[in-house]
Image (cartoon, rainbow, N blue to C red):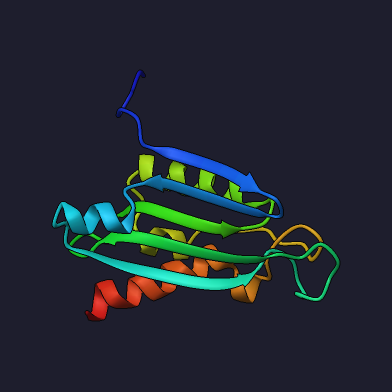
Amino acid sequence: VRSFGGTIAIFSTSFGDVSFAAAGVTENLAKERRFDIVTGSFEGFDKHPGTLPNTHKQLVKLIVSRESGIIIGGEIIGGPSTGELINLIGLAIENQMTVESILTSQIGTHPLLTAPPTAYPLMKAAEIAAKKHIFG
């Protein structure tokens, strides 16, 4: 089976200890094009507990279609794991995943490698966006 749905804009870079990344449609572009969106943002840590050495704050924002709940964009500011997390968001966009499907995805966590399971920034941003999508 062959499939190619096109390309999405996906980008990451790093300046010093801070990394920046975006995939799909940014919030500014969505507003400029008059898309009906909701966003979910969450700031947490990329390791747990946040006091571990080499832990970085991580801010994740998801841009979501208000009508369908489909993720159309994402933005991240954080540490070195930012590049990998934006690739995951890119995969979600390419597969037209909804915030609800993100919330029911299984994730594996480890204190030295990932954010805590109770405050995983991608999941928490999806949770916040889902509340806005469902309840307005």
